[in-house]
Image (cartoon, rainbow, N blue to C red):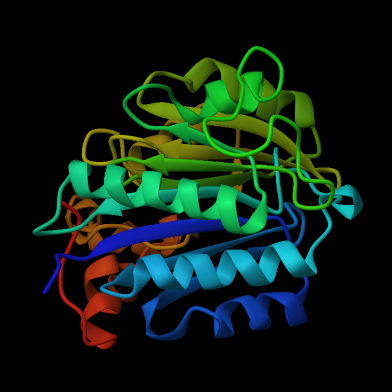
Length: 272
């Protein structure tokens, strides 16, 4: 059996009917669905031997259903299928993730006329967001955005943890100040205004070094926190670093690990 990959597809919608249709297109590869109405964004965690076919099926449904011109939400985006990162699991490696990335980009550009920007070893996702269609041209597909689907950032990366913290405040400037203060190469941060509620939104790029507990404490040292939110799943190794008495506070749990979801789905593997 080909060692499994994970793919964490970020789609620019929170519409329940659309989310259900997209989830239904993924078959047995689906491990988790996380929807955020304020971000107008849904994260589909897929894994296993059928993951590449599942991602293509989801993308086809999304690009024929959604219109990026009608999008309204706090999260940055370049398209309806905004980010498609392939992640190596146990037994696979980054080279296989890169091969899946490149294969998907060729397919999406040829079959759906989608401009595809690659990220991974050659550039990071924030560079794609900053420079797409200006100083950075698509790696595959048309040179202009698709009229309704926009474009897609297709990546290959190690496991990361997406993690949000709401402040117990109405001061959005504080969230932006904190996000700027704690930002570092292994910790991407945004300060967002979610209908008047400030949020520090983060990506933990090296979660075994800076995990949810460390990020929570960095933010809490600067402002009171109303609640925490894990987006999608996290590796079990990251969970094991956190004292169990803090799990509820940090919105983490054993059932939110990739390993357990893979086991329940009849698949096996864990983040390399």
